[in-house]
Image 1 (cartoon, rainbow, N blue to C red):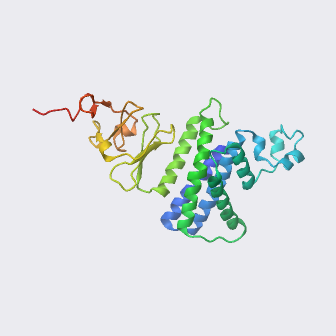
Image 2 (image 1 turned 45 degrees about the vertical axis):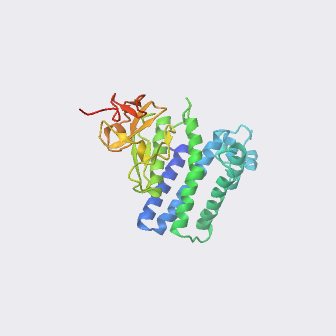
Length: 294
């Protein structure tokens, strides 16, 4: 049995689009750049429809079509909706403006509309752009449209009841896979992945951005994030001995960001608390600053 819910379909298209873009970047393949645009835009339309459906399923259908095909247009049956026409991307933007004004402001909607034109060129006319311009546009689409929509969809995934066919764990896993595909394009070889000590999921992305130490990290499951990490914030990890542990105040402990460390891979917290004597940290009851060798 082949079965896709709307949200599964959207995440599948987004992941495929990012994989196409990754391949296109490596091989400079025009065909894969085209496939990346088509798949990512299709995934965008689907994930946006999903968050509108969460409010009311009839939102995503053309009103004239509802009245034409449904006995009770405000309470249509599933079978009746199969015969109805859904709204186009301009209609989706209007509904986003109405129902999600904070998440989708004018700049976000412009990204959608600009990429819609490029998609239409491929489908109906001729298409010409540079690889760098297309890559930049697609990454902007992911950051400004797809990611906010996935966050909204994920908030519903946290509820006791969720869409049929996909549960919270599956959603988080798929969202993490999508983010990793995005980073493969945007920050190739400049990120690693580990376990998050806050939620214990293997969905912590550790960003280097050309530095020899992590400058940021964030979790796609629980939303934990640290930015602008300074090199002086790192301490030696008692598990792997690398200078890779940072203190997290909310956690009340340390976390290792070296992706090859067992503690990092398995979401194990480091026993680490502020030292009252020197202002440093006690790691496993020992403060390096206060320890005096005989």
